[in-house]
Image (cartoon, rainbow, N blue to C red; front, side, top):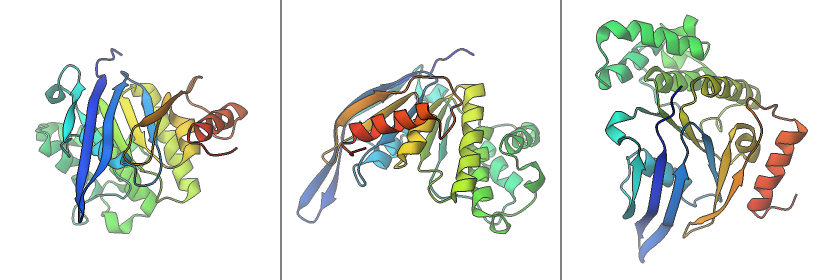
Length: 249
C-alpha cells in the first residue's frame, strides 16, 4: 500500500480565557507524524492532549501555528473515535454508519456494502439492526470504531477510546484495532493516559509536559506489530515511557 499522508504540526499554540486573563495550554508544539505510523500522545492530566488532537482534526483552531496534511486535508479521509460512544440512539447500528457515509457524500448504493464490511471488521455483523441503547458499552464502542472504519480512513484519531471499558473488553478491542491497522496501515494518532496501552500500540510515543505544554521527549518503540501485551519486550517499552514521564519504575 502506498503511504501518502504525513502530518506536520508547526509551532502550535493554544490558550483559553480564564477569569484572570488566559491560560496558555499548548506552547509551540512542532511534530512530524509519519505516513502509516501509530503514534501515541501521553502526558499529565489537563496538559492539552485532547486539544492537540482536536486541532489536528481541524475542530479547534490554534492561536498560532499550522497543521499540514499531505497532499492536502481535502484529499484525506479522517476518522475520529472519542472516549464515549457518540451514536444516534433512534437509528439502528446500520443506520448510524450509513448516516456517516451520507455526510461524506458516499452514494446510497454503496452504503450496504460499506456498513457490512465495517461491522464485520469489529465483529458486529449480527447487531446491524439493533439500536444503540440495547447494546453493551463495549459493543457501542465497537460501533463507534466501525463508523470510523466505514469511511476508509487515511488518518484515524482516537481520544481515550478504551478508557470507559472493562479490561477484558478493552483488551479484545485493542487487539482488533491493531490487527486492522496492521492490515490497512492508515496513520493512527492515539491520546491515552494508559502507558501500557501506548507501549502496546505505538511506533512512537510523544510525551507532553504540564502546562504550558511542550514536547518533553519522544520515545521510539522498536519491534514488529502485533505485540503481546504482557511480553518482556512490551513491558520494557512501558518502563521507557514511564521514565520519560519522570515516573520511578
